[in-house]
Image (cartoon, rainbow, N blue to C red):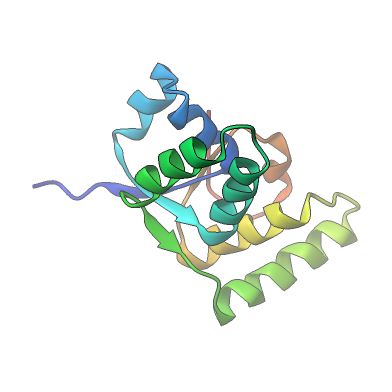
Length: 130
């Protein structure tokens, strides 16, 4: 059996997967999916803020059980501080949760599948743009 490379899913990619966007779903079949814990929080907030809470939470949890959850630890915190400082220094801040997502991916050395261009500002972050 061939071991698949890991890929972290950004919140917008989780949305695409749950909407069954064919191109995204097909591309991700090449990878072992991971979820940064901050993506879990963002997505669950969206579910709980929706008109179909139970259905959306259940769909997310079904997806999450097939993913490795990437937690925040001391290495992630160190990466977070480096990324946030570098972005501040070059005057290119990105949303706070996205700094945590980028830090998690750098700490775990896992590429990030995303549709957000602002992640391009994060040096050393491997991206799979979808």
